[in-house]
Image 1 (spheres, rainbow, N blue to C red):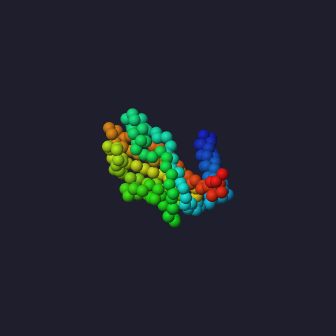
Image 2 (image 1 turned 120 degrees about the vertical axis):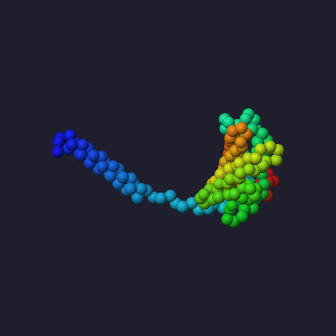
Image 3 (image 1 turned 90 degrees about the vertical axis):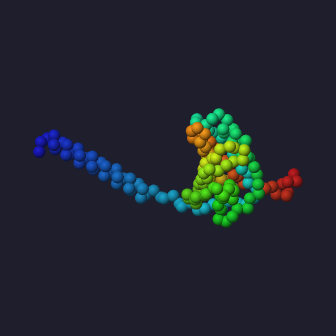
Length: 174
């Protein structure tokens, strides 16, 4: 075996050993790292909930004014008394039979509805909702609406649901 062949063999062996050492270190690190606790489903509390929609953003392919037109058709803020089903399911928050919800994890839901129509808007829309239950008093999500005018136009808006603490009778008289 020539010196250059021995050098090449030693380099290959060294690389294999280094890769094996890195792999072993990763396996050991993973074994020492405690796994995250499994998330338990959060049950939202009944009561007065406020819904707030954030600023809408539209893709560059949208015609000017599309996001503003949609914003005028949807409530930017509303409050209502809610009594949640047990276990919680978001279908009671967005009441539309065309929307099909899927649960991705205990507190993460996604819904898709294709070809829906909104009163006052001339085109069928595809909608996608993503909802996270953050606590018994707070939920957050995103809504994305897609339509095909001459090209695909997407409008996205974040939204929040927050439970409002109701004042006690003594606090109301102050």
